[in-house]
Image (tube, rainbow, N blue to C red; front, side, top):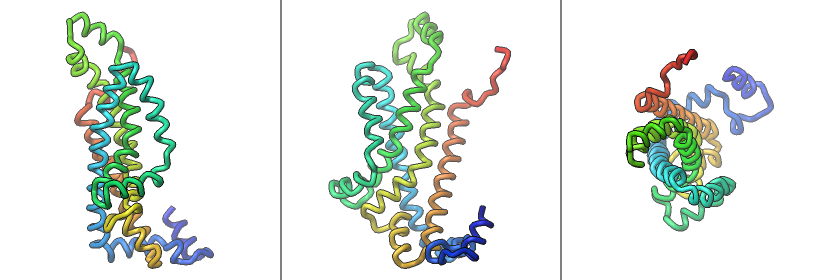
Length: 239
């Protein structure tokens, strides 16, 4: 793919300032490494803190929807409907409300990451084997004990899978948030680089953002194996 990109950029009709060749992007990654790293730290902070906020809020809402059928019937359609609202229309409004600091960017990232976490966690909570519920009732377990020993362990792999989905789009949300108003970050760097015809630098920022998403995805996959090892045990086909 990189070879085809290089050939098209060198021999095709597209100018360098529209589509730089991979070697130009690599050169920018090296020569602008200090600038890219400083802005990466800002975007990574927004992305990780926003994801953490989405995890906490999403897990809490999933528990509420799981425990109360009336809340699930009332709120779940609204939750789905919010995903039809373009985030680019919300970002300027949040910037107007909360300013151009860290808070509106965290809210935007959390809003984007929130939905897959709620859906997968709720599905995990509802996927508990009914026989396990019967066993806990036989043992006179309280609802809190059932949640602690049965429902949460069952839902944890699903919740982490939702977080892996969320982190794949969390970087895009952070860039949109920075587009709405910021003084630093990879999104701000993109906005600066394109009008200055520093297209290679803009593509380098995109490459760094993609690498950040892959790194966070790998960390969540490792956390899933550490926190929920039972979800990765080989299953005996004879049982």
